[in-house]
Image 1 (tube, rainbow, N blue to C red):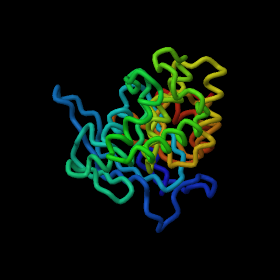
Image 2: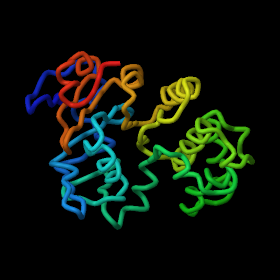
Image 3: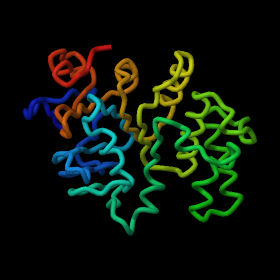
Length: 258
């Protein structure tokens, strides 16, 4: 996949981590556009592919369209264009399957945790998939172990710290066995220790990952590929080390080097 930079195609780096030619993408977005009811144009002909196992950062100023794009990936929003996850089109009849394939983790974990206990929060998705109780319990145990919270099943979710809640929110989507994890500002509101712990966790997860963030230090450390959005368009897409070194590009789109 070429870098897009001021509508020009530039050569990619062999270390970019992008999907190799011929491999089926985990996520494919083609010519996606979206207007809100008030007439605001949020997405303008956005196309994006993410290959299996890629870790991709989505960056840009507030209002660039990042969150709007992410809400199209599991059908919360429906614009003009085509979105496909794990070879399955994001269409109304496919939404139950799509929402199991796309693990969307919101910025505020309180938007995701609504059950009395951690176990019930993590079990909610598998239960609504109609899985038998034995499998539900197994998925909850595995998901909590993955996020380092195996001993928290009986804890009250609303009594946890923000960092602990974020880990439980991640467990709620891991229990669905998704094909792609999609994070909205995962490091927001975390103290340095919790932020470092979250980065360690995200590095250990082998799933395809798309993360919308303003945390450029995290992008530099964790994501081989960076996609820059501004005014509803993708303006650059390529190896993080190359795009991060382009000070003029970053400044033109409201970003700073870490």
